[in-house]
Image: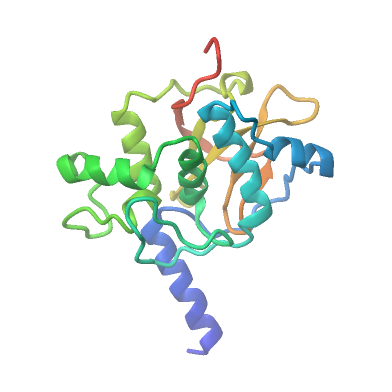
Length: 223
Protein backbone atom coordinates (compact mmCIF):
# COMPACT_ATOMS: atom_id res chain seq x y z
CA UNK A 1 0.00 0.00 0.00
CA UNK A 2 1.52 3.34 -0.97
CA UNK A 3 1.77 6.11 1.62
CA UNK A 4 -0.83 8.33 -0.07
CA UNK A 5 -3.47 5.60 -0.10
CA UNK A 6 -2.62 4.64 3.48
CA UNK A 7 -3.05 8.26 4.66
CA UNK A 8 -6.42 8.57 2.91
CA UNK A 9 -7.58 5.28 4.43
CA UNK A 10 -6.69 6.49 7.93
CA UNK A 11 -8.60 9.76 7.44
CA UNK A 12 -11.69 7.94 6.20
CA UNK A 13 -11.54 5.44 9.07
CA UNK A 14 -11.26 8.17 11.70
CA UNK A 15 -14.09 10.01 9.96
CA UNK A 16 -16.32 7.11 10.93
CA UNK A 17 -15.48 7.80 14.57
CA UNK A 18 -16.90 11.32 14.47
CA UNK A 19 -20.04 10.63 12.48
CA UNK A 20 -19.18 13.39 10.04
CA UNK A 21 -18.36 12.79 6.42
CA UNK A 22 -15.52 13.65 4.11
CA UNK A 23 -16.93 14.59 0.72
CA UNK A 24 -16.79 17.30 -1.90
CA UNK A 25 -20.33 18.48 -2.43
CA UNK A 26 -21.58 20.37 -5.44
CA UNK A 27 -20.68 24.03 -5.04
CA UNK A 28 -23.48 25.92 -3.36
CA UNK A 29 -21.33 28.63 -1.84
CA UNK A 30 -22.97 31.83 -0.64
CA UNK A 31 -20.41 34.56 -1.15
CA UNK A 32 -20.27 37.68 1.01
CA UNK A 33 -18.60 40.94 0.08
CA UNK A 34 -15.93 42.30 2.40
CA UNK A 35 -18.29 44.70 4.14
CA UNK A 36 -21.04 42.11 4.49
CA UNK A 37 -18.56 39.55 5.83
CA UNK A 38 -17.18 42.05 8.36
CA UNK A 39 -20.69 43.01 9.49
CA UNK A 40 -21.72 39.36 9.90
CA UNK A 41 -18.74 38.73 12.20
CA UNK A 42 -19.17 41.88 14.28
CA UNK A 43 -20.24 41.38 17.88
CA UNK A 44 -21.93 44.32 19.60
CA UNK A 45 -21.11 45.03 23.27
CA UNK A 46 -24.65 44.03 24.26
CA UNK A 47 -24.87 41.05 21.88
CA UNK A 48 -27.13 38.16 22.87
CA UNK A 49 -25.82 34.58 23.09
CA UNK A 50 -27.51 33.88 19.75
CA UNK A 51 -25.84 36.86 18.07
CA UNK A 52 -22.45 35.79 19.44
CA UNK A 53 -22.93 32.25 18.18
CA UNK A 54 -23.99 33.45 14.73
CA UNK A 55 -21.06 35.86 14.42
CA UNK A 56 -18.66 33.08 15.38
CA UNK A 57 -20.12 30.66 12.85
CA UNK A 58 -19.42 33.17 10.05
CA UNK A 59 -15.96 33.85 11.45
CA UNK A 60 -15.20 30.13 11.25
CA UNK A 61 -15.60 30.29 7.47
CA UNK A 62 -12.52 32.53 7.39
CA UNK A 63 -10.43 30.40 9.76
CA UNK A 64 -11.35 26.71 9.53
CA UNK A 65 -9.97 25.79 6.14
CA UNK A 66 -9.80 21.99 6.23
CA UNK A 67 -11.57 18.87 7.41
CA UNK A 68 -9.63 16.72 9.87
CA UNK A 69 -11.38 13.97 11.87
CA UNK A 70 -8.26 12.86 13.75
CA UNK A 71 -8.76 11.77 17.35
CA UNK A 72 -7.07 14.35 19.57
CA UNK A 73 -6.64 14.48 23.32
CA UNK A 74 -8.26 17.74 24.38
CA UNK A 75 -8.19 20.03 27.37
CA UNK A 76 -11.33 19.88 29.50
CA UNK A 77 -13.47 21.88 29.65
CA UNK A 78 -13.27 24.21 26.65
CA UNK A 79 -10.97 21.87 24.75
CA UNK A 80 -10.64 22.23 20.99
CA UNK A 81 -8.51 21.19 18.06
CA UNK A 82 -6.64 23.99 16.21
CA UNK A 83 -9.12 26.40 14.65
CA UNK A 84 -7.80 25.88 11.13
CA UNK A 85 -9.21 22.35 11.05
CA UNK A 86 -12.06 20.26 12.41
CA UNK A 87 -15.20 18.28 11.56
CA UNK A 88 -18.86 19.18 11.11
CA UNK A 89 -19.62 18.91 14.83
CA UNK A 90 -16.80 21.33 15.65
CA UNK A 91 -18.71 24.08 13.83
CA UNK A 92 -21.54 23.68 16.32
CA UNK A 93 -19.27 23.33 19.35
CA UNK A 94 -17.30 26.46 18.52
CA UNK A 95 -20.36 28.59 17.79
CA UNK A 96 -22.11 27.48 20.96
CA UNK A 97 -19.06 28.25 23.08
CA UNK A 98 -19.21 31.84 21.93
CA UNK A 99 -22.86 31.77 22.95
CA UNK A 100 -21.85 30.65 26.46
CA UNK A 101 -22.52 26.89 26.12
CA UNK A 102 -19.62 24.43 26.26
CA UNK A 103 -20.99 21.34 24.51
CA UNK A 104 -17.89 19.35 25.40
CA UNK A 105 -18.72 19.79 29.07
CA UNK A 106 -22.50 19.52 28.69
CA UNK A 107 -22.39 16.32 26.64
CA UNK A 108 -19.73 14.73 28.84
CA UNK A 109 -21.61 15.45 32.04
CA UNK A 110 -24.88 14.11 30.67
CA UNK A 111 -23.23 11.02 29.22
CA UNK A 112 -21.45 10.35 32.51
CA UNK A 113 -24.84 10.11 34.22
CA UNK A 114 -26.85 8.61 31.36
CA UNK A 115 -24.42 6.69 29.17
CA UNK A 116 -27.01 4.09 28.14
CA UNK A 117 -29.27 6.85 26.76
CA UNK A 118 -26.71 7.71 24.09
CA UNK A 119 -25.98 5.80 20.86
CA UNK A 120 -24.03 2.65 21.60
CA UNK A 121 -21.64 2.93 18.70
CA UNK A 122 -17.91 3.08 18.15
CA UNK A 123 -17.24 0.32 20.71
CA UNK A 124 -17.16 2.80 23.58
CA UNK A 125 -17.59 1.41 27.09
CA UNK A 126 -17.67 4.75 28.86
CA UNK A 127 -17.80 8.49 28.07
CA UNK A 128 -14.78 10.06 26.40
CA UNK A 129 -14.49 13.83 26.84
CA UNK A 130 -12.09 14.03 23.91
CA UNK A 131 -14.49 12.83 21.22
CA UNK A 132 -18.10 12.43 22.43
CA UNK A 133 -19.14 16.02 21.65
CA UNK A 134 -17.57 15.72 18.19
CA UNK A 135 -19.92 12.90 17.17
CA UNK A 136 -23.11 13.92 15.40
CA UNK A 137 -25.42 11.25 16.94
CA UNK A 138 -24.32 12.32 20.42
CA UNK A 139 -25.08 15.99 19.72
CA UNK A 140 -28.46 15.01 18.34
CA UNK A 141 -29.21 12.99 21.46
CA UNK A 142 -28.11 15.80 23.75
CA UNK A 143 -30.34 18.34 22.01
CA UNK A 144 -33.27 15.92 22.17
CA UNK A 145 -32.68 15.28 25.87
CA UNK A 146 -32.69 19.04 26.48
CA UNK A 147 -36.11 19.33 24.88
CA UNK A 148 -34.76 21.38 21.97
CA UNK A 149 -36.09 19.26 19.09
CA UNK A 150 -38.50 20.77 16.60
CA UNK A 151 -40.75 19.02 14.11
CA UNK A 152 -39.23 18.40 10.71
CA UNK A 153 -40.35 20.57 7.84
CA UNK A 154 -39.68 21.14 4.16
CA UNK A 155 -40.49 24.81 4.56
CA UNK A 156 -37.35 26.96 4.57
CA UNK A 157 -39.07 29.59 6.71
CA UNK A 158 -39.23 27.09 9.59
CA UNK A 159 -35.45 27.17 10.02
CA UNK A 160 -34.27 30.27 11.87
CA UNK A 161 -30.78 31.70 12.45
CA UNK A 162 -28.99 29.73 15.16
CA UNK A 163 -30.98 26.55 14.61
CA UNK A 164 -28.96 23.34 14.38
CA UNK A 165 -29.79 20.93 11.57
CA UNK A 166 -28.69 17.33 11.11
CA UNK A 167 -28.89 15.30 7.92
CA UNK A 168 -28.54 11.74 6.74
CA UNK A 169 -26.23 11.64 3.74
CA UNK A 170 -26.62 9.40 0.72
CA UNK A 171 -24.41 6.71 2.25
CA UNK A 172 -26.30 6.68 5.57
CA UNK A 173 -23.82 8.68 7.60
CA UNK A 174 -24.81 11.79 9.53
CA UNK A 175 -23.88 15.44 9.11
CA UNK A 176 -24.64 18.61 11.10
CA UNK A 177 -24.60 22.37 10.59
CA UNK A 178 -25.93 25.66 11.91
CA UNK A 179 -28.39 28.02 10.23
CA UNK A 180 -26.72 31.38 9.61
CA UNK A 181 -28.24 34.85 9.61
CA UNK A 182 -27.51 35.20 5.88
CA UNK A 183 -30.49 34.80 3.55
CA UNK A 184 -29.97 32.90 0.31
CA UNK A 185 -30.77 35.31 -2.51
CA UNK A 186 -34.24 34.99 -4.00
CA UNK A 187 -35.33 32.31 -1.50
CA UNK A 188 -37.13 32.05 1.84
CA UNK A 189 -34.28 30.20 3.54
CA UNK A 190 -31.00 31.01 5.25
CA UNK A 191 -27.58 29.67 4.29
CA UNK A 192 -25.90 27.01 6.43
CA UNK A 193 -22.45 27.04 8.01
CA UNK A 194 -21.01 23.53 7.95
CA UNK A 195 -17.86 21.51 7.25
CA UNK A 196 -18.31 18.57 4.96
CA UNK A 197 -14.77 18.23 3.67
CA UNK A 198 -13.45 21.62 2.63
CA UNK A 199 -13.45 23.52 5.92
CA UNK A 200 -16.23 25.66 7.36
CA UNK A 201 -18.31 27.11 4.54
CA UNK A 202 -21.43 29.21 4.10
CA UNK A 203 -23.60 27.33 1.63
CA UNK A 204 -27.16 26.88 0.43
CA UNK A 205 -27.50 23.25 1.53
CA UNK A 206 -30.50 23.19 3.88
CA UNK A 207 -32.35 20.70 1.70
CA UNK A 208 -29.34 19.18 -0.02
CA UNK A 209 -29.71 15.99 2.05
CA UNK A 210 -32.42 14.32 4.11
CA UNK A 211 -33.11 16.41 7.22
CA UNK A 212 -33.34 14.14 10.28
CA UNK A 213 -32.98 16.65 13.09
CA UNK A 214 -33.94 20.27 13.77
CA UNK A 215 -33.01 21.87 17.09
CA UNK A 216 -33.46 25.37 18.52
CA UNK A 217 -31.37 26.12 21.61
CA UNK A 218 -30.92 29.88 21.22
CA UNK A 219 -34.11 31.78 20.49
CA UNK A 220 -34.74 34.97 18.61
CA UNK A 221 -36.82 37.64 20.31
CA UNK A 222 -40.44 36.64 19.92
CA UNK A 223 -39.70 33.01 18.98
